[in-house]
Image (cartoon, rainbow, N blue to C red; front, side, top):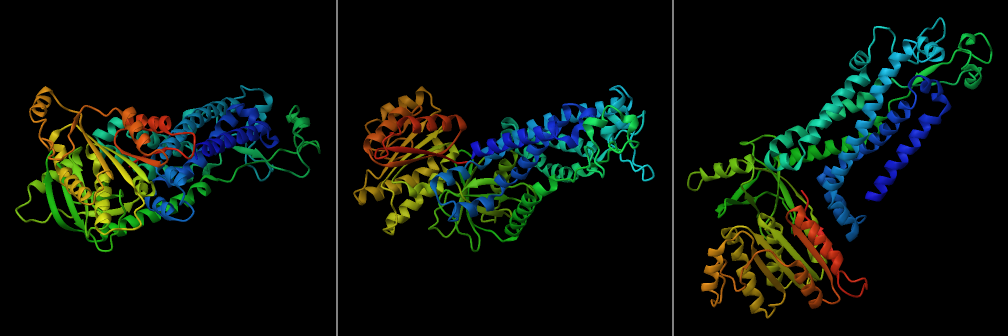
Length: 551
């Protein structure tokens, strides 16, 4: 998809650059503006294309529909859909780059329009600039500057194109700067509210070309022979070969590019509003260790798949803010649950609100949008799966492991997964507690069924000191782990991924292995490299496919 997208961008830029740089209808326009004309118009074409795309990757319901449709049932296409936010960012970067080029070129155009009107670029540019809209003289203007008192700044702030351009650029700068990782992580509300300037951005975009400030020569009868007439502007309208040239602005096209995605996004928001109005009730509220809040919710008609996520809105905190959370429940359960860690103002406010509830009191009103598909949905499509969770990133795998337990319990014949390797990396010891119960149940279930090899799990404590190690050494001979109570002992430090991948490859010499991560980007890059490194070129041998959760 990236190659196709980049290819279309390059084609549009080159095509429209040559169109405006060599087109005969723009020969007189180039006389006023020079090379700044194609440098302004070629980025505009790329901008139209990318502004058409920018909303589509964030239409979550559209992506979920595509994931489940017969058109996109292939694993490769689903992997591309899972990179929707990466593509959204790439498109945004392209919009930012092209906006910078487009803006600089048009600022030069404003300067050169003014200089041409003042006669600084020779008699031809001066004569073209003097042409005015006149029904008596049958003339039309080419230069939008109509007075010697008009400055480039005045031209920018008194034309539709200039004013909307300033508004669009300011909105874009605010959206991009507030999207930086440091702001998005620490001040999510700033990112969320500022990002809604896209409404102003698109409104300005639709009207930006209405001023038709760039004009081209029109066909006349008899035709105006540019090559013959450009050196004798004093004879325009006097010689049959040189009728006075006529000019007109091009029809605005941007709205035609963006109207379709805008309607799709409007339908998306309408569907979200309908879901917002649907009632949600609490089944259970639990405050887990390490300030993790578990909410078990019930919503009529709600159906989910493993690894999916929902957006939650708490009107008591904010009427507008929606935050994504992976569900930790299994599809087989009659409720859905989320585990919320305290990071940022919204989650802190929600946890404080729940902590202050009276005994047996109902939680605050909650609205739910979703569920939406993620890469983890495909976990049962692989014979062997490697699940890697970091901290609260274990949540999608809680759903998967619960679902596996139900499938074994019901002897589901459709389960094609033969083996699962589960790795969980945590900084604090008490972060393991809320998940250890599920692992104990699975551990017992696998033993009773004689399937100890089906689930291999390894827990890693990444934030530890010498006292932890000493305590573990004293109790090393115990049958169960001192931290989790599980038979599998907790490891200290980080996994040796080369060793882990090599082990999986040796134990599954002819399997397709799906590697799933919910965790930081640095770990994602490392695991993606390992998947490539340990995949065999022989299609009959082990292949690793990397999948990452994206919100």
